[in-house]
Image 1: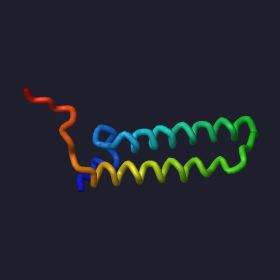
Image 2 (image 1 turned 60 degrees about the horizontal axis):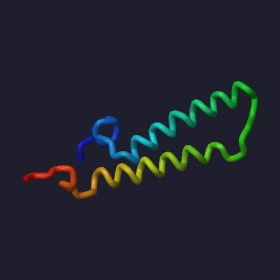
Image 3 (image 1 turned 180 degrees about the vertical axis):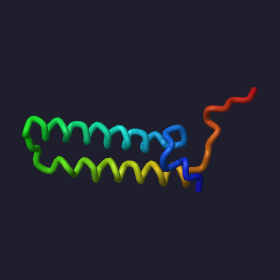
Length: 74
């Protein structure tokens, strides 16, 4: 397996990119919530959701068969 599929956005599956973006935004939102001294019950479950989406995307990236839908030869 190409390790770039784990850490390089250029080689990640779309689901992985969405999960990383969601993880970053969730961390920033949690920081803001801490600064304003607010608490949202079960907010930390978002991290589990983003991790699950990332792992799903990683499996799609590693095990999906490449397709040529975007390559049209005449």
